[in-house]
Structure formats: structure tokens, C-alpha cells
Length: 253
Ligand SMILES: [Zn+2]
Ligand SMILES: [Zn+2]
Image (tube, rainbow, N blue to C red):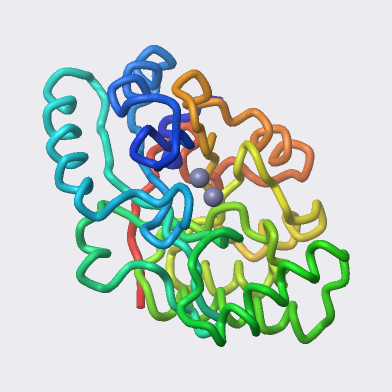
């Protein structure tokens, strides 16, 4: 079994030294490891500490075009956008979505909420629930709806580390992913849904994508945690979009 592409990697463009390597370093390692494709996906604009700056996107695109001529690998420019409200808003306008080849979306505790109401009713509530490990049914339902609305409102190609710092009904979110052709990520750093949920998703025919979420070039292409999880839970190879094949990024409204 071979991983053909790694679609979730960070570089120095994620601010405050969050990503440690350059785009070229990530690309070089990807080539060395035999990948056919790599995606550069910095943290979205609203991440208080690590978000990529809007003004750098053009620079990144130019850099990718330059590297594309030098290395035998397809290089994508994506982004890891943030969920910023319970109403499914993300930190990318429709126009900004068109700057990227594909969009990953995830929840990050240090993303700036859409407004003060969302801070109190959505972000702070989740933070407390996580801290005290007390997620009420109401909170989980609101979180699940937020993800579903985000998938309906935005062109989201991958959901990153679903359930991380925000408990959701993973089956309901995965159902919505399937409707839109969105991949559920098997993240090498954070895998937050249960074995049972993974099995149920497989039965539903949900598609997955393995990714490293590398923050340093040496981790590019390292997806063992996701692979082991898939093997352990009998996720069929056919349902893993980048295993022995290349994924097609498409989004259906
Ligand atoms: Zn993330
Ligand atoms: Zn990430």
C-alpha cells in the first residue's frame, strides 16, 4: 500500500514559527518519499497566532509555480480554514475560496469567532465543555449543526481532525460530507472519532483521506497513525482517496 499524496502540510507561512520548514523543503521531502502530489495548507486567516496572511497568498502561489517546474510532483495550494460560528461560517469569503485549489476546514480553539455572541455561545461553551469533559447533548447537537451548515455553505473538500476540541455527532457530519463529496481526514496527529464510528462511516461509503498535518518537512508523508487506524477498523482501501490512487477534489452543492 502506498500513499500517493499528502494534502495537509504546513510551512513557515503559518505565522509565529508554527510551521518550521519552507514550501521547497516540504516539496523536496515529498519527492524523496515518492509522493506524486503534495498540498500546502496553512492555517486560515482568522487563526489568532498561526493564520497565514492574505497578502502572502500570491507569493505562495508564485513560489509553487516556480517549484512546479523544478520538481517531479504536483503541488497544490490549499488552506486549512477555520470554523468561526455556530451558523457554519468559515474564515474565507467566497472570493477567497477561489484563490485555493482545495479547502480543508477544521475547528481550532484560537480562531477568532465571527462575533462576540459566537465567542460566548459557541467558542467559550465548547472550551468549558472540553476542559471539564462535560459535553451536553445540546452542545454536541449545536456543534454538529455548525459543521453541517459549514459544509452546505462553503466549498469544503476535506474536514480536518473532526471532533478535536469540539465534540460532534461524527456520523451525521460524515453523512453530510458524503453528500458533498468531502473527504473525512485520517489525521496523523489527531484522530478523534471512535472505532465504531469509523466502521459505521465505512458502511455508509464515506470517503477518507490520509494526511500528515506536518508542521516540519520531515513529517511530510508520515501517515502511519491513520493507516493503522484504518487497518484496525477495516476501513476498505477503496474508501481511502489517496491510498494507491489520487483523490479527485470535487464539491457538490
Ligand atoms: Zn488543524
Ligand atoms: Zn493543520
